[in-house]
Length: 202
Length: 202
Image (cartoon, rainbow over all chains, first blue to last red; front, top):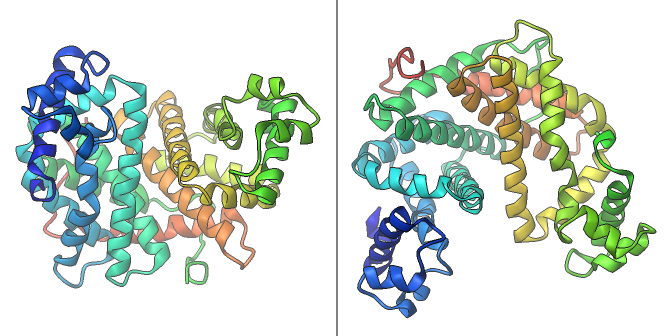
């Protein structure tokens, strides 16, 4: 993923995460972040709107990364399998290597209500990216929206479990297990059900 | 749901939705909203932080409404059925009656990027409320988080389909059909799978 972000932005992100971890989010200033990165405050503001924004650099890459992962998936997968294939590819690659950085960032995000709120929007960006990628691959609008929302829910739950767990399971494995669990949860018949989906969704 | 909101707040909400529909979100002011509701600007700010906040009055009720719906559900339901039971109860009651108001509000929210962003947080509040309600009912943390996220994804997709569709299907029926569709999507085996969830989630 770093290939999408300019080097200066990546250095500022790293400096910011270090400083926030040391001094708290409120305790670190933009000039300090820039200085730690060996760059100027002006350069900081060329890449980021504010101190919060530096924690969401990777979000900018999500649409392009997701579009590429979905476009290069093997043919013949149903929508949820396609979305999961993309997420599993991401999970086995960069994300696994970056676990310590991701955990450090997560701890900072959890420390501030405004950052936790902002993090919710990151999930929404992922949902939209998956939905758009599925639609680009020919999935109909309703299925794409539902599948994207469910895939994001699985991914968010897997990330949390992966970062919070102490069993050292790889993210891709956590993701596969939650996916299997969802299969069991979702296969339970609806109480009083018998509804068919043909008609409503086309 | 109105029982949870003070009457003045409900009058201000109605006046705001009417004015935003007539003049656009940017075109209507807080004094105009207060005047249309027959109240003072001061009263407006006793209930709402700003003009945007008035569109999210119902969000404040979500945790209490969801907790009550989950606590009064029949015993013996699995987590997803329990969450869906609560959402179906909401769907068959007030929401169906309020369809025109909900659609008018939705059109305003869709008209402004800042409102669309704020709306995402409303979904997050619903997810948290369902998760907390499930946990209060004894569901374990991982299942509660996953189920809540999936139930919210279904509910959001159903709302969008219900408001956007022109076939007059009741929300509860749209919800049941999407739930059935998820059952089929999610039951497809994971490519290269065979993962078991025992161990990781307990």
